[in-house]
Each structure stands twice: as C-alpha cells, then as structure tokens.
Length: 447
Image (cartoon, rainbow, N blue to C red):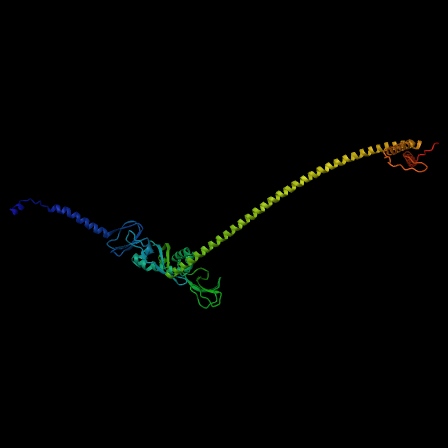
C-alpha cells in the first residue's frame, strides 16, 4: 500500500530548458564578477594605488574611482600616514594602520633617561616620486617601519640631547617640541659637547665630598662644571644639518608633536622633592610677602596715627593761632578803644585844665583885686578897725573865761587888807589886754 501511494503522487518535472535559462545567467554574472574584480578596482579618496599588471606595466592611480589592474596586484597607500606612540594609535577604515609603537626611550643632556609619547604625520608625494617609494619599500608598513620610524626615533634623541631634563621641566617644553619638528622637517643638527666653567652664585662649603644633587667642582673652587651642546656651523655661519632620508623622496612633514615625556623614577622622586622645596619656597615667599604686607600695614597704620595726631595738633595749633589772633585783634581793638578813650580823656583834661587855668587866672585876678583892696584899706587906716575887732574878741574871750572861773573857798588877807577876787581879775585882764594890744601892735594910749 505505501509504495503504491508514492507512485500515485504527481511529481512536477523541471525541463532542461528552464534550468538552462536560470543557470546560464547566474554563471555569466559570477564569471563577470570574478573577472571584473580582477580587471578593475576602486580607488578611495585620500588614497593612492600602486598597480602592477600581468603585462608588466607598473603605474600609480591617484584619481578617485574605478581603474584597471588587468589581473595584476594593487597596493593601497594613504596619502598621509603617521607614526605615533601606543597611546595615540589608530586604525583607519581602509585597514591600513599607522605605525603604533610604545613610548620611545630618550636620554636628556645630563644622562636623565625618559620615555616619550609623540604623534607625527607625513604626506607622500605624487607621481614618479611616489612610484619610487613604492618600488623601494613595496608596502606602506615597510616604508613606515624602515624609513619613518627610525627617523622619528633619531630625531627625538637628537632633540633630547640639546637640553637637560631640568630645562625641559623648567619651561622649555614648547622649545623641545619646536626643535623636534624643525629637525624632523629640515634635518638633524650636527652638534658637539662642550665643557664650560661657570661662577657659582652660592659656592658650596669647603668639602672634598660631593653631596647628592650637587655639581662636580674642584675642591675649594667657586667654579662649577657644566656641559653644553653647541651646534656646528659652516664657514658662512649656517648650521650644519644631517638630511632626513625620507625627505629625499619628497615626503613632507605635516605634523610633529611631543605629547608627553615620562622621566625615570629617580628623577621623578627628585622632581617631587624639588616641587616640595618649591612649594615650601613659595609658602615662605608668601609668608614673607604677608609679613611685608603686615609690616606695610603696621607702617601705614602708624603713619595714619601719626598723621592723625599731626592733623589734630595742626588743628589745635590753628585753633590756638586763630584764638590768639582773635585775642590779638581784640586786644588791639581794646587798646585802640582805650587809646581813643585816653585821647578823649586827655582832650577833656586839657579842656578842664584850660578852664581851670582860666578860672584860676580869673580867681587870681579877683584875689589880687581883693588883696589890693584890702591892702589899700589897710594902708589907709593901719588896719585899726580889724585890730580893734580882734582885740574886742580876745577880751571878750578872756572875760567869758574869767566869768566861768571858780570862786576860791578860802580867802587870804594881810595887815594892809586883803586882795579880792575882783582885783585879781582886773589885774589879769589888764595884763592880757596889754599883751593882746602889744601882739596886735595897737597903741591903746590916747592921742
């Protein structure tokens, strides 16, 4: 039963003609494709092709697009190729890598070794010059390994020999990069090492033992020995250079950079100590500047206080001077007022004096007149009337005195009779009258 069922199924039969119609085009397409890839190739932008055909023809293709290779061999070259350190390595889309190497060792002037990272780019020539390179080195890798990489290594070492590590890390990084590109482009300097003796700024202590980190010098000498590199020059004074070999093929240097230099651990430790010393020096310098600023601040404050006191003293002096000047002016004004008053008093006194003199003269004239009149009167009667009046007043005074005299309580008498009170008074009055008349020069006798 199963066998019979299988024979009963209708199996479609494929005609040979249909198979031929399908297979022949596929075979043709495959053959064309295989033939096309052997005959033609596509040149990418930024590339050049070194073509060798089966007919013995060798040519360079520079244009972008399809070109014939006629079952030959084609080597693709980039127009710009590079030699870089490992950290800068790159693989381009074409599959042609740049030369990527590890950090290269160099030795600075002064025997300080280091590892350098770099990046360089070179532009290949066109035409016959490129064909010469392709014929000489066959592949880009071979050209970079045999021509470019050795030139870069030699140039790096030659540049490192021009300066010391201290100079590099002290600020000559840009000069190092410029010298590297200059020598890579125009050739290596021919140099010689020269020993020079320089005067020490701070001569070391007199010791025969060389201390670590010091320069070698003669014992007891203030001179230090240094080695410098001098560039050789020709008769015209131009620097003598060693031509870069790749430049003979017309290869141009597009870019050359030194990206990093890593010195040996011993120098790094020394750099750390130097940095610490510089940091301490910077701190000390800042402290010194701070002290200077504080000193200036103290000086400024002192000057301010002195100036304040001076201004205060000046103000007080001005006030005292102004006050003294005011008092002087007031004194002058008072003196002038007193002087005017004195002048007025003087003038008044003079007027009073003149008036008194006039009055005195008038009084004198009056007195003289009265005296003259009395004199004339006295001369006329001998001043008898006045004398008599005086005598009367005298006698009157004695009479009053006698009247008031007390009466004695005892009376004394003699044989001839006693002397009474009346007699005594009469005699006394007579004597006194005689005396008064004598004093007045009055003649009491009748004429």
